[in-house]
Amino acid sequence: EKDLDEVLQTHSVFVNVSKGQVAKKEDLITAFGTDDQTEICKQILTKGEVQVSDKERHTQLEQMFRDIATIVADKCVNPETKRPYTVILIERAMKDIHYSVKTNKSTKQQALEVIKQLKEKMKIERAHMRLRFILPVNEGKKLKEKLKPLIKVIESEDYGQQLEIVCLIDPGCFREIDELIKKETKGKGSLEVLNLKDVEEGDEKFE
Image (cartoon, rainbow, N blue to C red; front, side, top):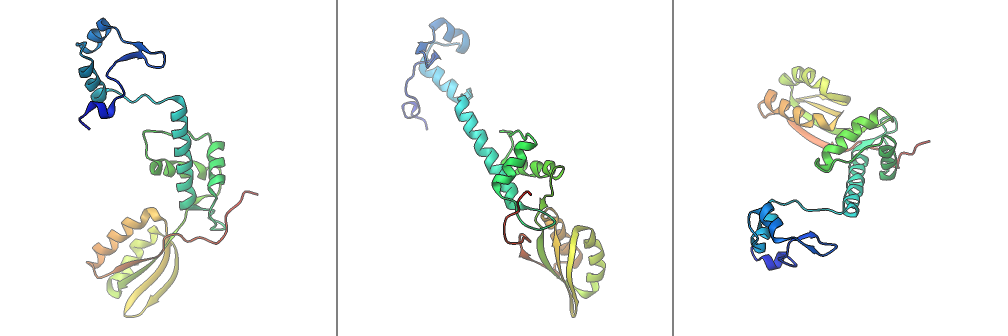
């Protein structure tokens, strides 16, 4: 927006806007090198920082806290029951570990941090993805050995004209598995996502 009147309520520069105290001419020259208030407004808009009230900051932190808890609840389960945790339960657990929201980091990054910290206090891990690999038989047996460390559970194997494997993996390993299959089979192998999250019905509760 280039029209200052569309952005500003006034061209006056204040020392304290809530008290209506306007800056003195000599103070403006000392701080900005000019007493041209329109020019000073441009400098403030270009180089200044937005002043956020304590109430606004508190609201922002609360929203980010809730968003992080929502991401964690969406991605994780109790590994013993495979049931997801509710957002409220994750929020409570985050408060128990005194998690402090960082406004300079994305909620997704912080959700991954929270999962690591919660693992020390409760039974929680990212829900597994269910995949199907279809691999050429010749490369398949050798490739299976390379894939094993990245697989949590092999649910089924079928050796026919091709090797078909259905398995569960940690979502964090998906890209590495995909690249390995493409590289080792020179594009002949295929990878299919059967379930993004292997979860049971119903929410997990703390006893």
